[in-house]
Image (cartoon, rainbow, N blue to C red; front, side):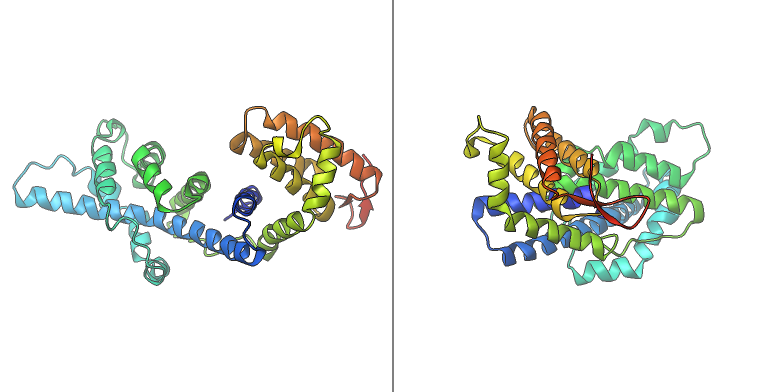
Length: 313
């Protein structure tokens, strides 16, 4: 689930916390594990949100029946109440057990957000005025993309729930949408039960943190060499951390191509640093890369073979 870029962002957040609070490595390792666990809880919470919408739909239809109101939301029976994807989530023993074990109850004291999004679904013109035959899964995907994902109240709610969930939101939404598209093909709910793709990805995160902190003073000197007009405290903390993390990948991650590392950190800087940071970081890293290459300190696996060679660019 967590991709390499997202892991890099989480390590950046941890290093930033360390820079501010001077926390010991052991404490930060626990924080790394906790934040990745919270990421998965976010994923399950967002999946279960469909169940809450279904429960609210059933409740509103029952209210209308008891009061003999003419129901104007019967069109949601096929789209929401009888939706096989939502029912599969609700019936999933794995999801039920996970929610119970981890006491996931973020909406218990703030159910009004569920009601607000339900109201938006009821009033969605693309559902009411559709002349095409209703496809429950396709309609649910559209509801998710055009209402749930874009709802500012839900976004703010998640922002207040857990640190880092705002950063996780795009990846969570991609994961949920992929599940829905997969379900539409075979009507089988496949829940990703792992946070990391494999053990290597988890080790990548921790080693990235460990090697960056262990070599901090060396990196400080190296960065200073190529920023003579800058005092170290004048370089933005985020920019400095991104430079150090990328240098770590240059030196210690033989299976990651230089251009991949370089491009990743330039792109991350566009989201997490200042307007001009990306060009600053790109220039400094290119100079440092050439320096390390000249010293024979960068070694990478070639694509054509498994041999470890000095990179000659």
